[in-house]
Image 1 (cartoon, one colour):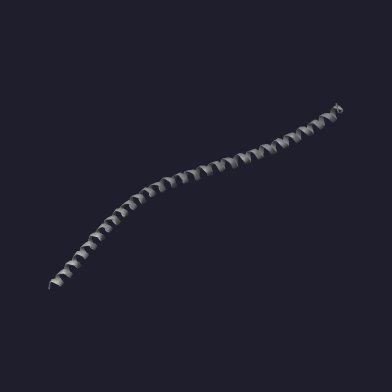
Image 2: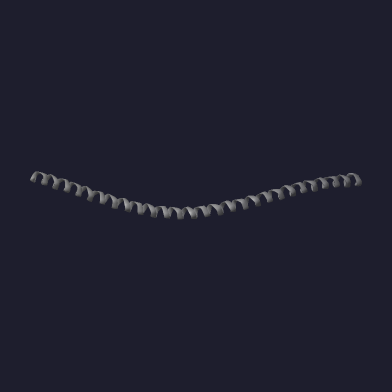
Amino acid sequence: LTKRMQNFELLKQNLESKLTMLRGEMARAKKAKAQAGERKAAAQGELGVTTKDVDEDVKGLAEIHHKCMTRATEFSSETKSRGEELAALAKAKEVVKSATGGA
């Protein structure tokens, strides 16, 4: 009977040691999970801020693009108008030259 009691006590001690070890692992796992949750929450907050910044930048880019295209159209119109003015002045100069005898 003592051999069986010794075996039982050894088994009991072994199981209690394993249980203590597993409880420690569980505590570390819970702590790691909590820390991961905190990091996740922080990352989600940063993502929200970054997403807002990107949206504002995209909106700003669209506004700048629109202004650039408007100014390019205006420049094209002004250039065409100046070309027409220069052509009219050249023609007027020829008319004046021919009317005054080339002087």
